Structures are given as C-alpha cells and as structure tokens.
Amino acid sequence: MGKRPFKPRGHSGQTKKNQTPDYQAPKASQKDTFPMRLNKYIANSGVCSRREADKLIEKGEIQVNGEVVTEMGHQVQASDVVKYQGKTLKPEKLVYVLLNKPKGFITTTSDPDGRKTVMDLVKNACDEQIFPVGRLDRATTGLLLFTNDGDVAKKLTHPSSNVKKIYQVTLDKPLTKNDSMTIMEGFELEDGPVQIDDMAFIGSDNTTIGIEIHIGRNRIVRRIFEHFGYTVEKLDRTVFANLTKRDLPRGKWRFLSEKEVRGLK
Image 1 (cartoon, rainbow, N blue to C red):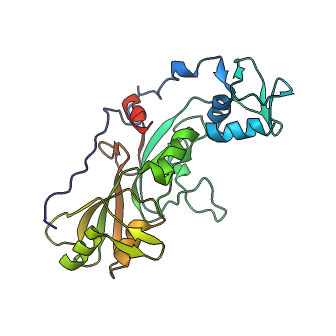
Image 2 (spheres, rainbow, N blue to C red):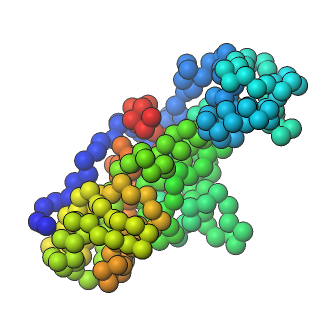
C-alpha cells in the first residue's frame, strides 16, 4: 500500500453554514402539496416509513375523519383529520441536518443516565422532530445526518444500499505492511467477512490511515484494527454517502442543499 494522499471520492453541494444569519431551512417541495397519498402523509408525520405506513393502513390502524381507511392509494386533503392510536397526525416539512459531531456525545434521542446526546447539538436547528441516521459511538467524531424523512433514513441504514463511508483513523502504533495487505485483501471477523473498498496512509509515520468502507456493522472500523492488535486513538468520519465535512466546523450543523438531498434519494 503506497503512501499516496487519501482523498475522498465524493463531493458536496454549495451550502451555507447554519451560522449565516440570512440562511433559511429548505422550503417544502411542491410534491408535498395536497391531495397527498395517505402513506406519505403518515411518513411525513414522523411515524414511520411509507412502506411501514402501508402495513398500518392494511391492518386498519389508521383513521381519516373518524373512519378506518384500508385503501392503499387513499388520498387525503389538508383539511382531513388523520389519526393513529388515537393521536392526530400532522405532516411535517422534510428536514435534513448535517452535524460534525464532537467527542463526548452519544448517538441517541435521549439518555436515562443524563449523558450528553447528539440531540443537544441540533436542538435549535428546526421545529420539526428529527432523529439521527445510524450511529457514531461516543468517542467517534465526524459526520452524522439527522432527518424526519423515514424513507431516506431507512435507505441509508439498510445494508443493501451500500452507503459509502470514509474515516480517518489514528492508531497507537504504525500499521505494518503485512497487516495493511491483509486488511486490503479481506479477512474474517467473528460476525463474518470484512472487505474494505480503499485504504491509504496519511502522513509519514504510518499511524494515520484513511479507510473507505460500505460495511455498516457495529464498531466495524475499530474492530478491524483491534483484530490486528492496534488501538484506535482517534476516529473521524469524513464522508457519508455524498456528504463531506467541507466548511462544517466541529460541533456545528447545517441544512443540506437541494442537490445533496437529491443525491441521497
């Protein structure tokens, strides 16, 4: 493995940071006007994805104007009252927020032990109820996406989507040539085979590495290097899907551009 510079093969749309005073959240798309399919109405209310909404409709768990609706293609108007489990649903504007996560925050919507969560960092981003897509452990920094778009969240986290992720890894000691070759060629962990997409050294001391993967298994990057006797001292996600950290300082967030949202979908 050569000591070539590791550059992510991706791009980011031109966007403004959230600190910019005149920056506004993206406006609702014309596609979100009424009449609207019932499953989309449910999904936009933050209950679940459209596919899961179809199942709720099929089971007779959705009421429109006081009557149970089981028709999949049922269209609703803005004036209709849609209820699930007795609760009135309200479709929200779809929002996409990108955070450059710092260390010390856990990826969860709440914590019974009172630890800092990533939600604390984006609590003022919008009025809509957003949630993190996937997870970064407490010590890992870098890109984390938040949205209320259940369809996009499911797509990005499903193994079949093969979403690209690039990490910068700092090890406690130099990565040897033999270990780097084995990692590049592929090997086995206790929960199955590991095949990465690309890897290269960053700098001259062989302790900082850029690694590109599509695997979504728990703590996979840390486990790759721990398997060969290394400790990951720093782990930073620099690319997620078509998104990069460009112009996004640590601990800050921004809305995605329309171009970036199209890329995710």
